[in-house]
Amino acid sequence: MKKTLWTAVALLLMSVMVVPVDASAKKGEPDWYVDESSLPFEALAGSDAEQMWGIHKNAGYRIEVPADWNGDLIMFAHGYRGEDARLFFNESEFPDGFRQWMLDEGYAWGMSTYGKNSYNVSEGVKDTHALARRFNGLVAKPDNIYIAGYSMGGHITAVSAETYGNTYSGAMPMCGVVGDYELFDYFLDFNVAGQQLALGASQFPAADDYTTAVVPDIKAALGMTPDPATWFFFAGLPLTEAGEQFKQLVELRSGGDRPNFDAAFTYWNSIPSGDVLGNFLWDQGTGDGTITGRSGVVIDNTDVVYQIDLDPAQSDIEQALNADIARVAQEPNGRSLNGKSNPPSVNGDMTMPVLSLHNLGDLFVPFHNEVVYAQEAAAQGNSDLLVQRAIRGVSHCGFTSGEMIEGMRDLITWAETGVRPAGDVVIDPAAVAAADYGCAFTRYDDGGHTLATPC
Image (cartoon, rainbow, N blue to C red; front, side, top):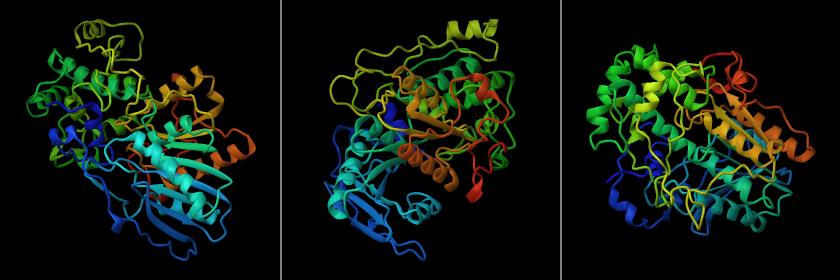
């Protein structure tokens, strides 16, 4: 049975290892349970903050309140936890530097395990909000509540900003799927364009033996088969002419011509996927085009004009590519917003200040998400409520404490004073392509971004 798109994405969101899903598990949910042994957590060294944990509305929680609490609360939404029934916390949920900053500045924070695992954005939105309300009874009613999150938690954060305007004063989504279906369209683009340029033909859905029998031939034709002896040092890939064309196409479809892409392309097409190097993004081409909660195909490339260079005029190669590439059209029930569905859409109709962070080199949840987010906010008349910052990282959600601290501090100041902080322009291709793009807000503390192009 073909995997749905969200199943394929969820399996990889917080790991570079592919874990197969038992298709029978999709027929019903497991008996979710909170692993209470994972709830307790220790104070930071020298801290006099109070730690609290427990279960609320079938979800585990952690809360920490500094002795000199300033009256504000920061809710944090964690990322994907897998498909198992166990609901749990990791030992550390965010960089210690960020946690230390919150406590030093007097902010309390809280986090829910959510009452369900899987890529369940609706559950995360609901349970994080419920815990924020529960804080009133456990501690006191906060003066202001802010929300932040990474990966699936970034998606949860963006949805929360559009859902609970009366609860939150500001939101900081990081590396989130804030472009909705554009993520799945990008996975389609990557795979059918790779097939077409390498093999001269493309199809969707992919064959059952796609990753084992077809992808090796694609990678060989493109010069994208990493050498196991040297891949870790990211010396580059021996791309063929078709491989160079494919690389440029991926850059344009993932966020546009921009710094840091060369390092990112090598990284994402070299890292292990299971025991195979460089299959990570190809594995996203094995779904059936549907997502959890929607009955129809959601992906669509019927109106995409594929480019393999920066010249908008169509070359002979581009004309042939666009004429012959496999086209997939969304089905009527695919992107329908009628009724309850998961995941909920992000529409740019936030009612509070939102400051987002995204790595330029993230090719799993690519920077193009931020372009779409900016366009949707503009369409809603909300550009003044959105500040976006490009970070020169190549990984998914690999932010340093300094970047998170600066973002949260600027968001809170914005919410309190009304003075909008600085950000990066994401919808001007010339600005994004500038040599110093992404340098303004990249911080190299904690040894971060060692694989990125330096500023």
